[in-house]
Length: 132
Image (cartoon, rainbow, N blue to C red; front, side):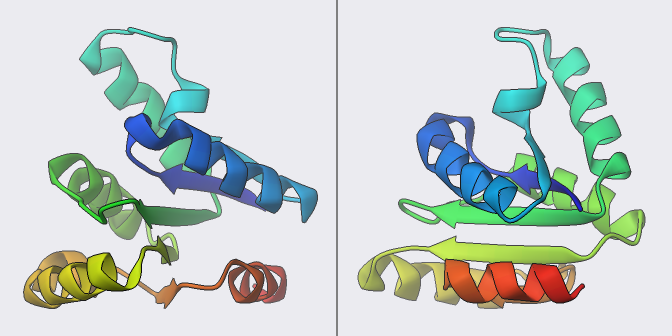
């Protein structure tokens, strides 16, 4: 299965760890920090990511560290939702961060509405992907 991970570039090590885990389970994984040239112009990054999202079978939003998300997450998630891709959230947060994330996520009706499923356990998440 081809998977695109929407994640903050500043957490590329964490994203790479998740990508390697999914690749070990037989998936082909793409994400912006992996699929774009370093320091590429913004319009090039946007077009590259759009192609990767449209060619993916599944779109994953990876919430890690402080659990923040913003315009880039919303735009990429919107592209995936419009393309009728399953949008799955993988949440890897400490308890206090998770409480803040849940409060914010609950308020963001349009963003939240794009999600097919949310997971906070990587093993359960991998099993779900295998059954798709």
